[in-house]
Length: 104
Image (cartoon, one colour):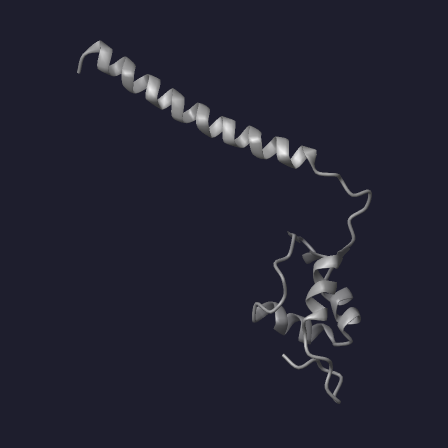
């Protein structure tokens, strides 16, 4: 391979890397342009159970079955969700039956 071909390949690699960096910078600029909430309300399984009127074991079942929205983080103490995500999700769920458990 000639020096010219090697240089052309290197230029192509650098261009691809620059495109990737440019995309990353665009994503970062969009994220920085979004307003930052003053406070983020997070909830864990216990709080979700209280909000839903069910026990922690039912919330655990919902997690296992993939019924809940995706958590925003998993900490040493467990998963946490945005309270607003859980509130929105609960509005879409059937109301509790006579035994205090939500129908799922």
